[in-house]
Image (cartoon, rainbow over all chains, first blue to last red; front, side):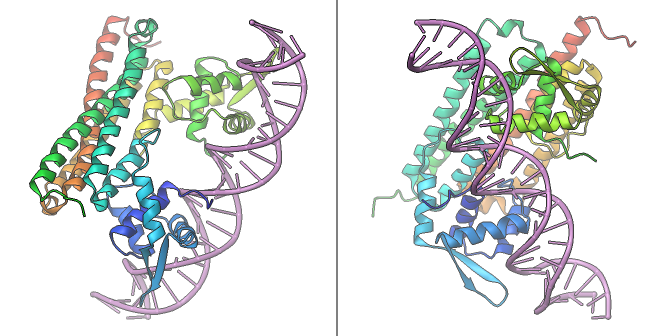
Amino acid sequence: MSPAITPLGYALLGLIRAEKRSGYALRKVFETTLLGNYSSSPGSIYPALKSLEKAGLIASEPIPRGSLFAITPSGREALDAWLAAPVAGESADILMLRFAFLQDLDRPDVTRGFLVAFADAARVNLAGIRAFTTSDVWPVMPLQSRLAVDFGVRNVEAHIAWAENALTQLEAHWSQNAPQTGG
Amino acid sequence: MSPAITPLGYALLGLIRAEKRSGYALRKVFETTLLGNYSSSPGSIYPALKSLEKAGLIASEPIPRGSLFAITPSGREALDAWLAAPVAGESADILMLRFAFLQDLDRPDVTRGFLVAFADAARVNLAGIRAFTTSDVWPVMPLQSRLAVDFGVRNVEAHIAWAENALTQLEAHWSQNAPQTGG
DNA sequence: CCAACCATGTAAGCTGTTACATGATTGA
DNA sequence: TCAATCATGTAACAGCTTACATGGTTGG
């Protein structure tokens, strides 16, 4: 098995699938957009691109200045597998990256599944914290500790609310815009 | 200047200040509590403890089985400096770690300053996103991209609401419980 | 002509992860 | 006695950051 693809690797793969880009252009994306808290330093991106190319997931074509990277069939495969992977354990950051890239997959069923799983995971998470806040140790904990836990509660609640709203809006959008009738 | 203390190092310092602990006990904390997404693997914690000890921030005393670590004066100094540092640029995770440890500092003024700065930073952040969502590119962006941005908005809003509520509750708590009159 | 930007690369160093290894003690 | 847990350690590896280095091009 080839070395695992890192989050940065997937971020690059996703951006490259959406549009052929040079290493420099990719760096600019990380510098300027909200998406991705990844470093735009050359020391991270160029080695990562090399490793993706070596793994056959992207291919470079020379252009007048520098080179352009395009995704390969096996790169598409790896990216799709990642996008469809279960929502377990991954951080919100990574999951949002996946959500953003699900767009290019254009598969409402997969996106729907993702959002449902995302909300479910958040609800499980919330239940776990609630179990804690209703235990007997909770009332005797210092206020500041309880507030730190409350931070987690509010975040998870925001996640759930976001996922429900996103699902509602996307369903409306999908039903308006020529539903996919298979192909 | 000695090598910078890592987030894991501060987490260890904070836990050790609150209570003398062994490496094993510290690992258990990471395994069982909600706080800290740090690994409990021996390969991370024991080397980190060694490095803290080498830097003179903690000291170990032998006990029947293993050893206990206690914070040193210079460790306290380093921890306090970190707790009082500006809220700029750090991730929410790290900031929450700081908030939890601010408890042991027992300095309402510092905690208040932290929460105010935290809320301010979140508001600046929110304003930045709002500037984006009211720009001319926003309406033409795909729905899914807008939803990804909405995730960020909801998170930051949750941060602000949490900080405001935390401040309110703590002020009430401080005014009830024998306000510090210096000394 | 000089500054700024385009475009890529590498070397050093630190950190953390995984995996393996050791040995003592406790409980069934 | 055997498994589980206590308690610590280390070696190999991967990854990212910082910093440095190199050239070409564009614009004033």
